[in-house]
Image (cartoon, rainbow, N blue to C red; front, side):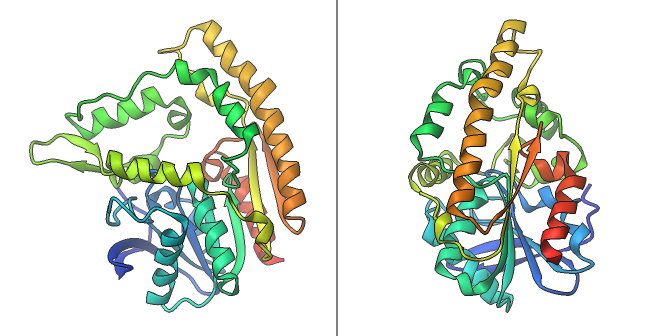
Length: 309
């Protein structure tokens, strides 16, 4: 059950309906953007912590949460236009953007297009460069690609079956599972007339988003506003599954993170700091991609310091 203290509402912008949450508060607007496939309810416990000094909101981008699911419009410019019109609809002139994972697209592109509207940026393990040859090499060498079972082709009989499958196939989500994950998941699925449960996001929408990820080169070097970026040095332990991995396979995963993934991440952090010399970087050892859940206290403290400077 959703117990987060907020207002849930919709606005019609750019030809679609966007859903948002408003936790209230006074001060500059702090707007949260969730990652790929997540709803704004992923911030139900974290976002309200800032309502004592900020007006805190979160918006579901198109194809996510309770917003509309068009098959097109997932390119950086359209996503940025959605965001611009959303801010205009709520009479928000300037904003602090906080984005997780996929939100690097809006944080980067929107700031380049409308820097005058951005007070500060906060990347929650979201400063990626998916186009670099180095990153592509990391993906190619990921042993988990050959270990993970395929997602079932048929829809699920119950929400409980759906959640159980997510936790079974994605151990990294299982380790952070709790009320927030339960609630946010309910806003990413649909129940058909026959009672079957499926993802709201269609295959066409999923492909459109991934095409953007595969083609958009982040424009970090063009960003001039104050910026805080969290990077997680993951050790691989969250990805281990006793259900579909042998002990030898588990060892391969840990070795991959130690000898491939972590060295690349360290190298990329140095590159990011060169490209954005005015940025503040926080590296989280043994961190989790959903750092604002798993390492909530640390992330809150660092964000609070950055926002008070």
